[in-house]
View 1 (cartoon, rainbow, N blue to C red):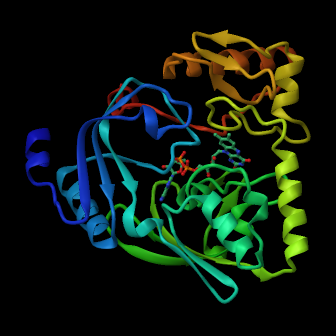
View 2 (cartoon, rainbow, N blue to C red):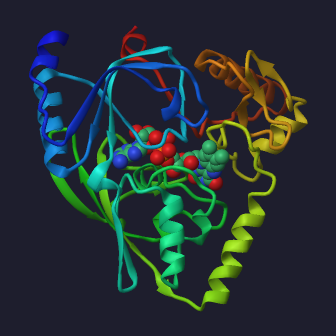
Length: 302
Ligand SMILES: Cc1cc2nc3c(=O)[nH]c(=O)nc-3n(C[C@H](O)[C@H](O)[C@H](O)COP(=O)(O)OP(=O)(O)OC[C@H]3O[C@@H](n4cnc5c(N)ncnc54)[C@H](O)[C@@H]3O)c2cc1C
């Protein structure tokens, strides 16, 4: 079945990589390999990819910059889909920003600010792509990407394309109803602003990042429980600096786990379990995970 699926792969607009190392495709630098990685560069390629995946019964995982995922397993049977090429393009038109889902959020922040447009400054310092940001409604305490979104174009797994207005999408705390769909493009609504005001907003966003750990991480591991902060609870439970292999609860910000060298996905998952258990025992509060923990399909089915 696998060999047959490989034989019938469409080629236009897609670069296929077999036994693809994922170490550089996740910001934690966790070592892992995907049986297949497909990098799709245009809409035609994406349609072909989706047709192929449906016909071959291939499960696939969508990957942006891998800044919010924990690759828990050393090997993935499922295909990884990454967007590139045309999907990384963006342009300012009037007071709107049109961007492909593979465009880095950092680039969109500077592109809009350089054009005198305000709205995305809160995203300064958030790694990842626009697609990843929309899928997880990335943001801060004060701002999230949903605040700026006018519409998003998405493909479902059968290949059907839809343009959804922001009010047709459900956005929550670091999640959206687009999970599992392929986001390809979006329009962000911004407003004209004086350069000094934009500079002030950027400085405030930079200020908020000062305590952020510098090492390899996936951002905040846990969601803040209502009325409290996950980092505060983890620190109060005495877990700053706690380690599993190369994975360590950051000394700077206890809601970050950093790869201090040689960490595996298993180390990170074990550390997450320990933190959850310790916080539950100490404060009777359940910490929900904010990052996406990815498992190989074999493990998922077992
Ligand atoms: C140092 C650091 C700081 C961070 N700070 C913040 C912060 O302040 N606020 C915050 O919200 N996050 C933060 N994060 C987490 C992360 O940067 C965001 O969640 C980011 O939006 C993820 O984008 P990505 O492209 O890396 O997505 P990935 O990590 O690759 O994927 C995340 C999820 O999005 C899905 N996805 C990705 N692209 C698409 C697409 N085109 N279509 C459909 N689904 C897609 C994936 O399938 C996956 O489920 C931080 C991370 C780091 C490392």
